Image (tube, rainbow, N blue to C red):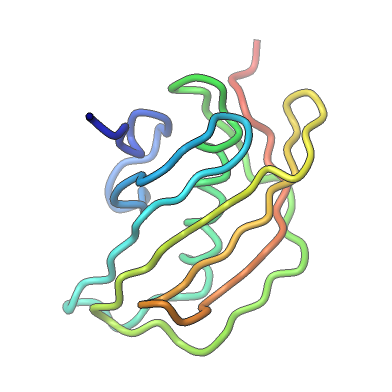
Amino acid sequence: MHSPAPWDFLPHRYPFLVLDRIIAREPGQSATALMRTTAGTRGCSPLLLLEAMAQLGGIAAADDANGGGILAAVDHADFHGTVEAGDSLTVSVTVVKSFGPLHLVAGEVTADGRPAASATITLKVGTPR
């Protein structure tokens, strides 16, 4: 069975698309994805971890491909330790609440099983009409 790719849902492309692979998705509810840091990078900025949660939140909240979206707010962002080059990251998000095109999403990132980041973010998902 073919898993959808992050670029099937997002307009982002390299180097702005930070997710590598979607491993689970329940539309409107939750999603999990993989993000890999390469040996050529010097770790991973906390802002990239936040961006990964936002991108995956848009994928989880969208009801169909190519919905587009905008990061509207970040609340309760916590960063735990550091992410090193070569770490394999698992990004998980859950849609907590939705009101029309606005979605409150709780996300977390683990680095090789270690907590790396967590945040609550608000997204506007869907294309303007």
